Length: 315
Ligand SMILES: NC(=O)c1ccc[n+]([C@@H]2O[C@H](COP(=O)([O-])OP(=O)(O)OC[C@H]3O[C@@H](n4cnc5c(N)ncnc54)[C@H](OP(=O)(O)O)[C@@H]3O)[C@@H](O)[C@H]2O)c1
Image (cartoon, rainbow, N blue to C red; front, side, top):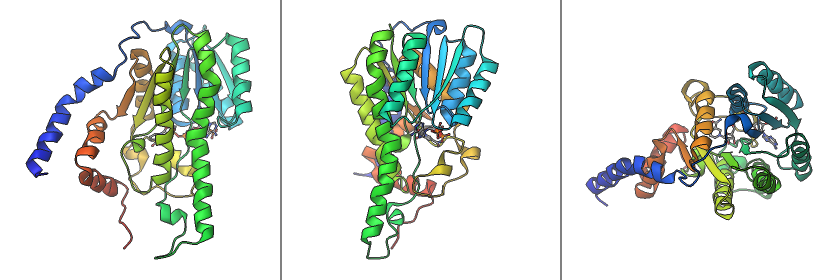
C-alpha cells in the first residue's frame, strides 16, 4: 500500500470517528433511572478509579453506593469519605470481598438483596497489572528458556487471569440475574483498558487478560439485551495501579501521575457513558481512530507503542 493511500485511509477514519461514536451509542434506552432511585455497586472501589467513582456518585445524591474490595481498611476509609460527601438520602455500604471468589460475591449479593432489594448499576473497576516483556517473566536467556521459567509464566498468567478475567466473570454471573429482576433499567459498566484493543510491548499478559474480559462483556451484552452494557477503555491513568504488578515488573513509560488521564475525568466519563447508554468508550477519544489505524497501518502503531513503553526488542 502506498503512503498516500494510507494517509487517505487514516483521514477517512478520522472523519468517520464522530459518526461511529454516535452509532455506538445505545439509542434504545431512552429513559434513564432518576439518580435519587439508583442503587450502585462498585467492585474494586478501595482505590483508584473505583474509589473516585464512589466519591462522585455519593455527591450526585443517588439512593445507595456499595463499595467492594479486598483491603478492609481502605474500604472503611472510602465509606467515611463518601459519607462526608453525600446528601441525607444516600446510603453508603462497604463490604470486603474478592471478586474472583464465588462465595464472596454471593455474600455481597445476599446483603444487597436484603438491604436494598437489588441493584440498578454494577461497575466492575477491579483489575491487576503485569508489566514485563514475556521472556523477562520467564527469565529466558538468549536461545534458551527452562522449565522453571515457563512454569513461572504460567503462574503469573494465572494471577493476571484471576484478576482481569475470572473476577469479571464471577461478578457477571453472580449479579446479572439480580440486575435483571430488581431494576427497571439495569446497567453494567466494565472499566477495561485500551491495551485490550491496541497491542503494546511489556503488556502481553495484562493486555490479553483484559481483552478476554472485554470480549466476555461485549458478548454478554448480546445475551442480555435488557441490560445496558458500557465498556470504558482508558489509556494510562494517574495512580498506583502499576505498583502491585503480578509479575513484579516496574513501569517503563513516563510517570502516569504527570502524563496520565486524571481519575476524576475518567470517573466522570464513566458516569456520563452509563447515563447516555454508550456501549464502548475510548479515553482519550482519539484512541478510537487509533484502534482502527492498527488494522490499516500496524507498523505505525507498533512503532508508537514501542516508543511509549521505551521498548527495544532483544537481538
Ligand atoms: N491505571 C491505569 O493506568 C489504567 C489504565 C487503563 C485501564 N485501567 C483499569 O482500570 C481499573 C482500575 O485501575 P486503577 O487505576 O483504579 O488501579 P488501582 O488503584 O490499583 O485499583 C484497582 C482496584 O481493584 C481492586 N481489586 C484488585 N483485585 C481484586 C480482587 N481480586 N477482588 C476485589 N477487588 C480487587 C483493588 O482493591 P483491593 O486490592 O483492595 O482488592 C482496587 O480497588 C483496572 O481494571 C485497570 O485494568 C487502569
